[in-house]
Amino acid sequence: MTSSSTRAAVRDAPTRTRLAAAGAAAVIVGAGLTLRAVATGEVAKYGGDALYTLLLFALVLVAAPRTAPVRAAALALAVSWGVEFLQLTDGPAHLARQSTAARLVLGSTFNAPDLFWYAVGAVTGPLAVRRR
Image 1 (tube, rainbow, N blue to C red):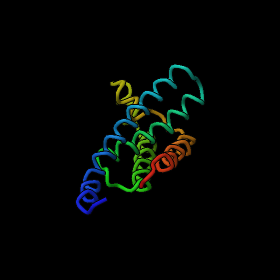
Image 2 (cartoon, rainbow, N blue to C red):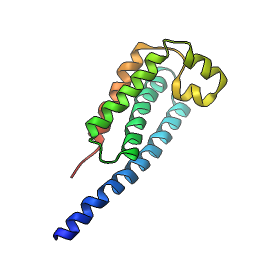
Image 3 (cartoon, one colour):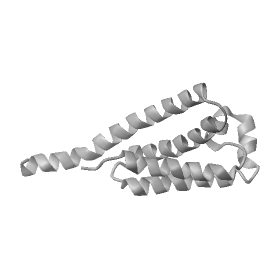
Image 4 (cartoon, rainbow, N blue to C red):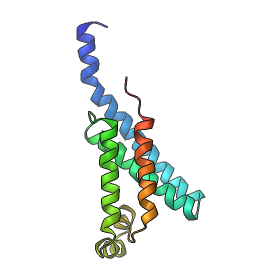
């Protein structure tokens, strides 16, 4: 590769990362919807938890494509855990009663095992991403 083509490849890397992350986000949403349609109980619940954090990981890369995968995973996990701990207050449950979207995004009831499954989703993100 020539110097100018190397610079062009480096310049285009964020665009490729952003597009790949956006595509992954769409696949993750589809996987979550499919999981809800075909599974029940703990499989659906905890699989959904992992996918929630994995989706946040992908969205971080859409918004900030130069973010290191481990950093994106840490941010996704922090947000997931923050939302879960927020459920110790009445706010998410109140909003969940008002809006289906709020219920899907914020949940309503704290559940300690969710914290583990969010971590599973966070670990999966960087493992799925290959940097060249």
